[in-house]
Amino acid sequence: MSVRAWSLASVVWLPVLAVLWLGTDWVSSHGLPPQHSRLVVKTDQGDRECVIHVPADYDDTKPIPLVIMLHGFGGTAGYAIRETGWSAKADRETFIIAYPEASRPDRSRPPNFRTNPQAWNDGSGRFQSAMDNIDDVGFIEELIDQLRNEYTLDAGRVYITGFSNGGSMAFRLAAELSFPVAAIAPVAGTCWVEKFKPRRTFSLCYLTGTADPLNPIQGGYPRLALGGKEQGGRAKPAVQSFLDQWIKFLDFPVVPRLDVTDNGVRKRVYGDGQEKAEILYITVDGLGHHWAGGVSQAPNLLVGMPTDKLKATDTLWDFFRSHEAVAK
Image (cartoon, rainbow, N blue to C red):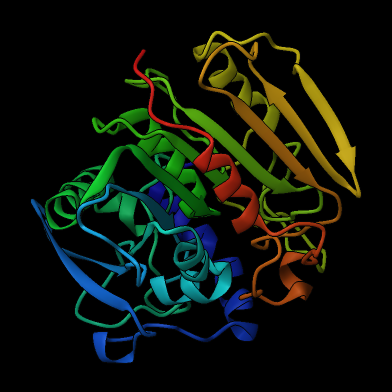
Protein backbone atom coordinates (compact mmCIF):
# COMPACT_ATOMS: atom_id res chain seq x y z
CA MET A 1 0.00 0.00 0.00
CA SER A 2 1.32 3.48 -0.90
CA VAL A 3 2.08 6.14 1.68
CA ARG A 4 -0.90 8.19 0.53
CA ALA A 5 -3.20 5.17 0.61
CA TRP A 6 -2.04 4.39 4.12
CA SER A 7 -2.71 7.97 5.16
CA LEU A 8 -6.26 7.69 3.84
CA ALA A 9 -6.75 4.35 5.56
CA SER A 10 -5.56 5.80 8.82
CA VAL A 11 -8.50 8.21 8.72
CA VAL A 12 -10.67 5.21 9.60
CA TRP A 13 -9.14 4.63 13.02
CA LEU A 14 -7.30 7.78 14.12
CA PRO A 15 -10.49 9.77 14.83
CA VAL A 16 -11.87 6.80 16.77
CA LEU A 17 -8.76 6.69 18.92
CA ALA A 18 -8.81 10.44 19.32
CA VAL A 19 -12.38 10.48 20.66
CA LEU A 20 -11.11 8.98 23.91
CA TRP A 21 -7.57 10.33 23.72
CA LEU A 22 -7.60 14.01 22.81
CA GLY A 23 -4.83 15.30 25.04
CA THR A 24 -1.70 16.79 23.58
CA ASP A 25 1.01 17.04 26.16
CA TRP A 26 3.04 19.69 24.35
CA VAL A 27 4.80 21.91 26.84
CA SER A 28 7.05 24.90 26.32
CA SER A 29 10.38 25.20 28.08
CA HIS A 30 8.58 27.12 30.84
CA GLY A 31 6.14 24.26 31.43
CA LEU A 32 8.65 21.42 31.67
CA PRO A 33 9.19 19.42 34.87
CA PRO A 34 12.17 20.47 37.02
CA GLN A 35 15.62 19.66 35.61
CA HIS A 36 14.22 19.27 32.09
CA SER A 37 15.11 21.59 29.24
CA ARG A 38 14.16 21.93 25.59
CA LEU A 39 17.04 21.68 23.14
CA VAL A 40 16.99 22.93 19.55
CA VAL A 41 18.89 20.71 17.10
CA LYS A 42 20.00 22.11 13.73
CA THR A 43 19.48 19.74 10.78
CA ASP A 44 19.56 20.04 6.98
CA GLN A 45 15.75 20.02 7.05
CA GLY A 46 15.40 22.75 9.64
CA ASP A 47 15.31 22.97 13.42
CA ARG A 48 14.20 19.96 15.44
CA GLU A 49 13.54 19.75 19.17
CA CYS A 50 14.34 17.47 22.06
CA VAL A 51 13.66 17.57 25.79
CA ILE A 52 16.56 16.44 27.94
CA HIS A 53 16.93 15.61 31.62
CA VAL A 54 20.34 15.75 33.31
CA PRO A 55 20.62 14.14 36.75
CA ALA A 56 21.36 16.46 39.66
CA ASP A 57 24.62 14.67 40.46
CA TYR A 58 26.05 15.04 36.96
CA ASP A 59 29.81 15.62 37.11
CA ASP A 60 31.43 16.80 33.89
CA THR A 61 34.70 15.12 34.86
CA LYS A 62 33.06 11.69 34.70
CA PRO A 63 31.66 10.20 31.45
CA ILE A 64 27.95 9.48 31.71
CA PRO A 65 25.63 7.16 29.71
CA LEU A 66 22.96 8.53 27.38
CA VAL A 67 19.51 6.99 26.85
CA ILE A 68 17.34 8.23 23.98
CA MET A 69 13.59 7.62 24.37
CA LEU A 70 11.45 7.85 21.21
CA HIS A 71 7.73 8.47 21.78
CA GLY A 72 5.02 6.67 19.84
CA PHE A 73 2.81 7.87 16.99
CA GLY A 74 0.87 10.98 17.97
CA GLY A 75 2.93 11.33 21.13
CA THR A 76 5.30 13.95 22.44
CA ALA A 77 8.28 14.22 24.72
CA GLY A 78 5.84 15.19 27.46
CA TYR A 79 3.88 11.97 26.97
CA ALA A 80 7.06 9.93 27.17
CA ILE A 81 8.27 11.65 30.33
CA ARG A 82 5.02 10.94 32.14
CA GLU A 83 4.40 7.48 30.69
CA THR A 84 7.79 5.83 31.21
CA GLY A 85 9.41 7.28 34.33
CA TRP A 86 12.79 7.41 32.61
CA SER A 87 13.71 10.74 34.23
CA ALA A 88 13.33 9.40 37.76
CA LYS A 89 15.40 6.38 36.71
CA ALA A 90 18.09 8.69 35.32
CA ASP A 91 18.30 10.44 38.69
CA ARG A 92 18.73 7.17 40.55
CA GLU A 93 21.23 5.63 38.15
CA THR A 94 23.02 8.76 36.88
CA PHE A 95 22.56 8.97 33.13
CA ILE A 96 21.21 11.60 30.74
CA ILE A 97 17.81 10.89 29.20
CA ALA A 98 16.78 12.55 25.93
CA TYR A 99 13.22 12.72 24.58
CA PRO A 100 13.36 13.87 20.94
CA GLU A 101 10.22 15.13 19.23
CA ALA A 102 9.16 13.47 15.97
CA SER A 103 8.03 15.62 13.04
CA ARG A 104 4.43 16.68 12.47
CA PRO A 105 2.51 17.75 9.34
CA ASP A 106 2.28 21.44 10.33
CA ARG A 107 5.38 22.60 12.18
CA SER A 108 3.84 26.01 12.80
CA ARG A 109 1.23 24.50 15.14
CA PRO A 110 1.64 22.46 18.33
CA PRO A 111 1.27 18.68 18.02
CA ASN A 112 -2.17 17.17 18.45
CA PHE A 113 -2.97 13.47 18.22
CA ARG A 114 -6.05 14.04 16.07
CA THR A 115 -5.19 17.07 13.94
CA ASN A 116 -1.39 17.36 13.89
CA PRO A 117 0.16 14.06 15.00
CA GLN A 118 3.90 13.62 15.42
CA ALA A 119 5.38 10.50 13.80
CA TRP A 120 8.78 9.00 13.05
CA ASN A 121 9.85 8.03 9.55
CA ASP A 122 10.51 4.45 10.67
CA GLY A 123 10.99 2.91 7.23
CA SER A 124 7.46 1.58 6.90
CA GLY A 125 6.31 4.20 4.41
CA ARG A 126 3.53 5.22 6.79
CA PHE A 127 2.55 8.66 8.06
CA GLN A 128 3.26 12.20 6.85
CA SER A 129 6.91 11.86 7.88
CA ALA A 130 7.43 9.31 5.09
CA MET A 131 5.52 11.41 2.55
CA ASP A 132 7.78 14.36 3.43
CA ASN A 133 10.92 12.17 3.41
CA ILE A 134 11.89 13.35 6.89
CA ASP A 135 15.47 12.38 7.75
CA ASP A 136 15.00 11.20 11.32
CA VAL A 137 18.24 9.21 11.22
CA GLY A 138 20.12 12.41 10.45
CA PHE A 139 18.24 14.20 13.23
CA ILE A 140 19.24 11.65 15.87
CA GLU A 141 22.85 11.70 14.67
CA GLU A 142 22.91 15.49 15.04
CA LEU A 143 21.30 15.18 18.46
CA ILE A 144 23.95 12.74 19.67
CA ASP A 145 26.73 14.96 18.31
CA GLN A 146 25.28 18.02 20.03
CA LEU A 147 24.93 16.23 23.36
CA ARG A 148 28.50 14.91 23.06
CA ASN A 149 29.69 18.50 22.63
CA GLU A 150 27.70 19.82 25.59
CA TYR A 151 28.13 16.96 28.08
CA THR A 152 30.75 14.40 29.00
CA LEU A 153 29.16 11.32 27.50
CA ASP A 154 30.47 7.78 27.66
CA ALA A 155 30.76 7.03 23.93
CA GLY A 156 30.48 3.31 24.59
CA ARG A 157 27.23 3.60 26.50
CA VAL A 158 24.67 5.25 24.22
CA TYR A 159 21.32 3.46 24.20
CA ILE A 160 18.09 3.89 22.24
CA THR A 161 14.60 2.80 23.22
CA GLY A 162 11.17 3.70 21.95
CA PHE A 163 7.51 2.78 22.09
CA SER A 164 5.32 1.70 19.15
CA ASN A 165 6.28 3.91 16.16
CA GLY A 166 9.24 5.03 18.30
CA GLY A 167 10.23 1.39 18.81
CA SER A 168 10.10 0.88 15.05
CA MET A 169 12.34 3.94 14.64
CA ALA A 170 14.82 2.43 17.11
CA PHE A 171 15.21 -0.54 14.77
CA ARG A 172 15.88 1.77 11.82
CA LEU A 173 18.44 3.76 13.79
CA ALA A 174 20.27 0.59 14.77
CA ALA A 175 20.55 -0.33 11.10
CA GLU A 176 21.54 3.10 9.75
CA LEU A 177 23.26 5.22 12.41
CA SER A 178 26.96 5.79 11.90
CA PHE A 179 27.48 6.33 15.63
CA PRO A 180 28.18 3.11 17.59
CA VAL A 181 25.11 2.47 19.74
CA ALA A 182 25.68 -0.07 22.52
CA ALA A 183 22.12 -1.44 22.62
CA ILE A 184 18.57 -0.76 21.52
CA ALA A 185 15.33 -1.71 23.25
CA PRO A 186 12.22 -1.33 21.08
CA VAL A 187 8.91 -1.76 22.90
CA ALA A 188 5.80 -2.82 20.95
CA GLY A 189 7.31 -1.69 17.65
CA THR A 190 7.92 -3.36 14.30
CA CYS A 191 11.15 -3.71 12.37
CA TRP A 192 10.52 -2.41 8.85
CA VAL A 193 14.16 -2.55 7.77
CA GLU A 194 14.35 -4.28 4.37
CA LYS A 195 17.99 -3.82 3.36
CA PHE A 196 19.41 -5.44 6.42
CA LYS A 197 23.02 -4.27 6.68
CA PRO A 198 23.65 -2.74 10.11
CA ARG A 199 27.05 -1.08 10.38
CA ARG A 200 27.95 -2.46 13.79
CA THR A 201 27.25 -5.20 16.29
CA PHE A 202 25.05 -4.20 19.23
CA SER A 203 22.72 -5.81 21.73
CA LEU A 204 18.96 -5.86 21.42
CA CYS A 205 16.16 -6.17 23.96
CA TYR A 206 12.65 -6.42 22.53
CA LEU A 207 9.57 -6.23 24.75
CA THR A 208 5.92 -6.63 23.76
CA GLY A 209 2.59 -7.91 25.01
CA THR A 210 0.87 -11.09 23.89
CA ALA A 211 -2.47 -9.25 23.70
CA ASP A 212 -1.34 -6.11 21.89
CA PRO A 213 -3.99 -5.40 19.21
CA LEU A 214 -1.94 -2.69 17.48
CA ASN A 215 1.28 -4.70 17.38
CA PRO A 216 0.00 -8.25 16.82
CA ILE A 217 2.68 -10.69 17.89
CA GLN A 218 1.84 -13.10 15.06
CA GLY A 219 1.78 -10.29 12.52
CA GLY A 220 -1.05 -8.87 10.45
CA TYR A 221 -3.05 -5.67 10.47
CA PRO A 222 -3.66 -3.69 13.67
CA ARG A 223 -7.07 -3.91 15.32
CA LEU A 224 -8.65 -2.06 18.20
CA ALA A 225 -9.01 -4.02 21.44
CA LEU A 226 -12.79 -3.50 21.43
CA GLY A 227 -12.99 -5.57 18.26
CA GLY A 228 -14.15 -4.76 14.78
CA LYS A 229 -12.40 -4.88 11.45
CA GLU A 230 -8.73 -4.62 10.67
CA GLN A 231 -7.56 -1.02 10.77
CA GLY A 232 -5.88 -0.98 7.39
CA GLY A 233 -2.50 0.49 6.66
CA ARG A 234 0.29 -2.03 6.18
CA ALA A 235 0.39 -5.58 7.50
CA LYS A 236 3.04 -6.09 10.14
CA PRO A 237 5.44 -9.04 10.08
CA ALA A 238 5.38 -11.54 12.93
CA VAL A 239 7.69 -10.52 15.76
CA GLN A 240 9.77 -13.69 15.59
CA SER A 241 10.35 -13.20 11.87
CA PHE A 242 12.04 -9.83 12.23
CA LEU A 243 13.95 -10.87 15.34
CA ASP A 244 15.28 -13.77 13.28
CA GLN A 245 16.92 -11.17 11.01
CA TRP A 246 18.90 -9.78 13.91
CA ILE A 247 19.75 -13.28 15.14
CA LYS A 248 21.13 -14.07 11.70
CA PHE A 249 23.07 -10.80 11.50
CA LEU A 250 24.73 -11.48 14.86
CA ASP A 251 25.44 -15.06 13.80
CA PHE A 252 23.70 -16.48 16.85
CA PRO A 253 22.17 -19.95 17.14
CA VAL A 254 18.49 -19.87 16.20
CA VAL A 255 17.57 -21.70 19.40
CA PRO A 256 17.70 -19.49 22.51
CA ARG A 257 20.30 -20.45 25.09
CA LEU A 258 17.82 -19.47 27.81
CA ASP A 259 14.03 -19.67 27.77
CA VAL A 260 12.25 -19.05 31.09
CA THR A 261 8.76 -17.95 32.12
CA ASP A 262 7.86 -16.46 35.47
CA ASN A 263 4.49 -14.91 36.38
CA GLY A 264 3.48 -14.58 32.74
CA VAL A 265 6.74 -12.94 31.69
CA ARG A 266 8.69 -15.02 29.18
CA LYS A 267 12.35 -14.22 28.52
CA ARG A 268 14.34 -15.75 25.66
CA VAL A 269 18.06 -15.01 25.37
CA TYR A 270 19.90 -15.54 22.08
CA GLY A 271 23.67 -15.77 21.79
CA ASP A 272 26.30 -18.31 22.70
CA GLY A 273 27.16 -16.61 25.99
CA GLN A 274 30.71 -15.89 24.80
CA GLU A 275 29.97 -12.70 22.88
CA LYS A 276 29.47 -9.27 24.43
CA ALA A 277 26.31 -8.81 22.36
CA GLU A 278 23.05 -10.67 22.90
CA ILE A 279 19.35 -10.56 22.11
CA LEU A 280 16.73 -10.62 24.86
CA TYR A 281 13.14 -11.19 23.73
CA ILE A 282 10.50 -10.52 26.41
CA THR A 283 6.78 -11.16 26.10
CA VAL A 284 4.26 -10.22 28.79
CA ASP A 285 1.11 -12.31 28.97
CA GLY A 286 -2.08 -10.28 28.53
CA LEU A 287 -0.32 -6.95 27.98
CA GLY A 288 -1.90 -4.63 25.41
CA HIS A 289 -0.36 -1.62 23.68
CA HIS A 290 1.14 0.01 26.76
CA TRP A 291 4.55 0.79 28.23
CA ALA A 292 4.64 -2.03 30.79
CA GLY A 293 4.43 -0.77 34.35
CA GLY A 294 4.12 2.83 33.20
CA VAL A 295 1.38 5.44 33.36
CA SER A 296 -1.04 4.49 30.59
CA GLN A 297 -1.65 7.22 28.01
CA ALA A 298 -4.33 5.48 25.95
CA PRO A 299 -7.71 3.94 26.93
CA ASN A 300 -7.71 0.21 27.64
CA LEU A 301 -10.91 -0.14 25.64
CA LEU A 302 -8.96 0.60 22.48
CA VAL A 303 -5.43 -0.68 23.09
CA GLY A 304 -5.84 -3.52 25.59
CA MET A 305 -4.88 -3.96 29.21
CA PRO A 306 -1.81 -2.66 31.07
CA THR A 307 0.26 -4.84 33.40
CA ASP A 308 1.98 -4.82 36.77
CA LYS A 309 4.00 -7.96 36.00
CA LEU A 310 7.11 -5.88 35.30
CA LYS A 311 8.27 -2.29 34.83
CA ALA A 312 9.67 -1.84 31.36
CA THR A 313 11.91 1.06 32.36
CA ASP A 314 13.61 -0.94 35.13
CA THR A 315 13.95 -4.00 32.90
CA LEU A 316 15.42 -2.08 29.98
CA TRP A 317 17.90 -0.18 32.13
CA ASP A 318 19.11 -3.43 33.68
CA PHE A 319 19.74 -4.64 30.13
CA PHE A 320 21.41 -1.42 29.02
CA ARG A 321 23.83 -1.12 31.90
CA SER A 322 25.14 -4.64 31.29
CA HIS A 323 26.14 -3.84 27.68
CA GLU A 324 28.73 -1.53 26.15
CA ALA A 325 29.38 -0.80 22.50
CA VAL A 326 31.35 -3.46 20.66
CA ALA A 327 33.06 -3.32 17.28
CA LYS A 328 32.29 -5.88 14.61
